[in-house]
Image (cartoon, rainbow, N blue to C red; front, top):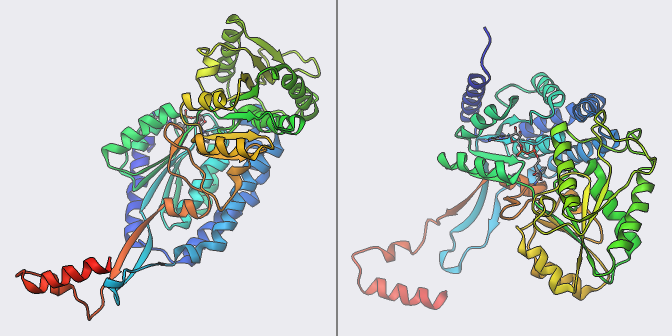
Length: 473
Ligand code: NAD
């Protein structure tokens, strides 16, 4: 008998709940074994993953899948495995003199059944990354990948079934209807990566169950070239950070701020830098395609609207290839002079289009960043320490890389996450472990202690004790 996706989902959820109740705090060996199985799954099937993602994109650079997805997941698993025992151990917390010889500890324990909803753009990294953190923290995990990467999602489901019991880690595939049912389940934690718009709906669904959420969302991440910057070096970094995965990267520079008078010079340099990276586009397997025709049309519409509004469009097409309906690739495109109300300047671009905007002095650059939603990432290029520190102090973003793009994401010892409309909460390394753990404060009272001296009936002893306490604190 065929089981409908929704009842399958509920059955899996219930099975995981029961499994968690039976083993609510798995020891380190059990967690390490799960991490090892996840690692083996990525190591033994690298070419299968590369092929599946390539098929889903109709052309995704294999090197990008290997570096920006598989390598990052494996590094995350190895890091978690190495530090797990330390992360699991109770933290020693200072205890006020007046509470001694009682003492404090902070215990870290698994939350229970965790739901993970992931997007298509880095389908492997953004599903397995949170999953590894949730497993390391001792949880059971249900994972819903994007319907836009069906080959990957099917592969992951098959490999996970072969390596994990369904009540340990399970993949649930389906479209938006399954996603909506998924986020309505009373998870102990829900981890969502995707658009700000869907993130809002997910937060509302989770609120009905008071399920805590981590939201890893998007936004318009600026790259600022300071007047003090080394333009060729900055432009080379921006070209890489922007056109990796054809701009379909949550932390890709969304728009470029340059000092007044420099837009044309920077555009010329960018054109040369992109040509060096991608001497050809359609015929070049290093240059990734757009995930769907619908997404490509959205980019086309953005460019058309900017052009109609009087912006200058610089299409970079080094081998003069023909971009027609038969390709899902989209040429790297620079836009100078787009109107502030153009879609390109209001919505997250999420593709290989880069608006270049001139600013008049640092105050204006900071004001431009601050008038929009708080971005997921910010990039600043320059040598002036004073200007750098002003930008760091006076803007708020999920994270920053100074004098390069993207690299803050792969710092295992740092949290990764957005702020406000670009996200809530964080993960990576120990931050991920903590996201999926309850950090429970415990006070161990000593056998001999003065607490009873505060009990009623209140009188002189109480007053004496309170006076003493005031002096000690
Ligand atoms: P999306 O929000 O459309 O979809 C993400 C996931 O949510 C998919 O699995 C989808 O099936 C599911 N979904 C869709 N509608 C749903 C609903 N109503 N209820 C529950 N689930 C639903 O995002 P996308 O297009 O897959 O990804 C692109 C977006 O993700 C961009 O905005 C990008 O910036 C963002 N992103 C953020 C990060 C980050 O780490 N902060 C990483 C990658 C992508």
